[in-house]
Image (cartoon, rainbow, N blue to C red):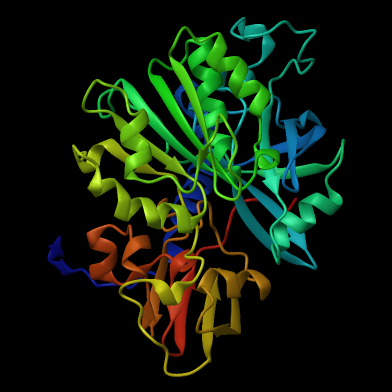
Length: 429
């Protein structure tokens, strides 16, 4: 291409440098002589967008509550002392990603919000579902439930260090595990396993408050009766919902009257599914449960179209070797060179370890949100090397595959590699 007879030169720009273009452009505009141009953030559409979709949220722990099964529920409120005056709105079923700094390294983990969307709103909006005296948080709150995972670095850190007054940094609400009337049926069968009940607690509260308009039949699987989370709340919601909420408990390790026994199968779903067809199925829980449901749901007497089946973001496979398309490595460890803004790292990544996990423990400030391959927030340019990404976690756009981009959160090395990784904008907690 030529302009004014001069041939343009092709310039290769890395992903990291490309992300610097906008802030540099803004700086140059503001330096223009005699310019009365306002800062872009001061325009009302931009300020509104920033309040609805902030890059991050400074939060503070307002209270903690111990739950069964080594689980603690935390109430998070905006931290005005660090510039967050209110929380971003969300849809029932979404999550926030928590930033934790451990031994000088930054880790991020997603946790479903288990409070209702209206409880995140400031009291002054007049949309709170309860009296101010009941929830004395005038600027709104989120609640998340964190289960202590064996070997879980972040869950252990949160359980040991978070208490009333602890300050943290979280992402804006994210996630696609939400009800959409243009796509979903008016009747939903929810399938929850263990702490996977958290997004459904938010949905139950939203249905009762009227911010969500669908009926929910909830099949909740737990090992034992004592492991059931929020049972009193769920039973109370079912009792006062005029039939819009039904709850069925399924115990795998106990046989008791009034409970289903075993695992949730196609037969269980068919037994309690609403008479109206089609209905939607939403499922959240351990990866093993979701894998089982992938095999079970097609066995329904009247199988559902794929658009009526939604799984929550499921993290990395519990055992990647069990993936149907698993590719065996040629050796146990690989060397990965990482460009991260102006910094360069050379790290070691195990063959059974995701690239993101290796970067986190090596001090690379890499962006991430869902850690399941869905959101694309960790979108990274592959400079060289080969990899394995399970088909069950490959949600990349077609262009990403063509032009050599990967999602490190669910990608495993299969040779030495080189990556160009954007720098995460989220400040440290």
